Length: 363
Image (cartoon, rainbow, N blue to C red; front, side):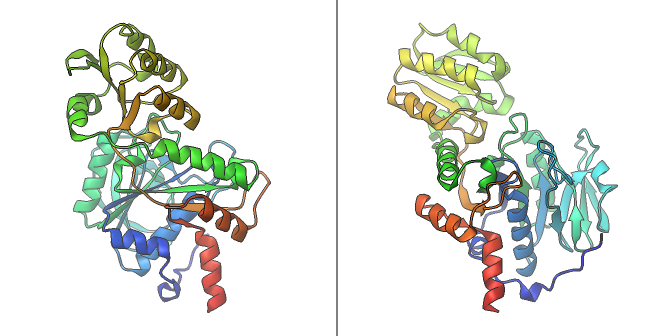
């Protein structure tokens, strides 16, 4: 299927794009609360806005995305729509399926299950599958390479729930897509999104704590320090198996614990037990995307007197809404937007499809 290049002069500057542009950020991640919450639609909106503003864009994905159907529900999903001049860092295998002409610009020598990550320049408007690097260190190299090749803004196609992949928090700003696909009524979606915002919004650790934990987040693994900063344990072990090891220090004078990977239920139970014994405990995680717990868990943890912080903080640039659900239970768009804006005071909330439709009516 061929796509005609839309007329850029017809694209009206959106408030979301204006915030992104005015911030001067160099890296933006777009991630969804779950499948079918409008992440790709939001990203395509930003790509179109950038094309209209003549901003040089670099695009890559945290792991694999851009498939014709999502890999959970197998529902058809909108393709990523790239524009002439876009620089895309993607695996070699995906380029064999690209539906646009492209020109090879650079190789990264970073391997992936789908082949080496290559940097190409898009020559026409159309759809493209994007599969980038998964590891955080490789992702940072890809971002740097895209910038070296001329991108002034790098967009990361990210996702919550990819515990083994690089985090969207490596970006200067993050757009969170939420919507009816989460399930339940409007108030249910609002509650679930608010709870997730509570997790994603944990504060960044201060400079002294970051310095203490730097080795954990540089090399991976788990670290334990006493109240005076003395190292009790520091090894590159998987966080999946860290709970039992941490419980060995239940009677020690534990002051700080740092874990580089995902925090699931078993590890969280161990951390909570330690917090009960050591109320002044500080736990440092990579960022809020690595927490696979409920917001109520966090509130209980804080009531114990313990503190949970992120090695990196997440700068939430905006929340986008998708009132449609392919599983049924869609919302009326204007009502959903009105309720969400009332619920998420302090956040920039928008429905990019509704705004585009309104612009057309104005014309």
